[in-house]
Image (tube, rainbow, N blue to C red; front, side):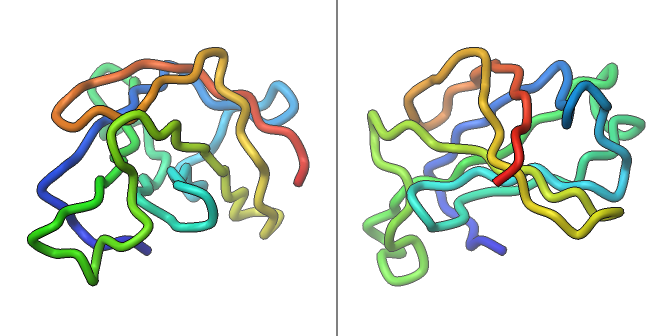
Length: 116
């Protein structure tokens, strides 16, 4: 999992699919800065606003440097991974658009997963 940071951005996704199939409520979408998990969301669209879910991405916080080491800094572009719980498989997600990390900003993209 990840530690909370004061510096956060939220990436909103209208849909997330694996080979054309939508995720189910047991699946997860995680945000990464390199190999460091900087945010994640269990993909239950029934509790998301109008079925559009967000994935938080935490930023490096100098006031909490030990717990946020390796987290996003301004301009970093996070990557996303999907955990398919039913298959116990991780996939790299390829968004239709990449947005750089910028604290306190809401960003939108739509990833498609490919096998890792």
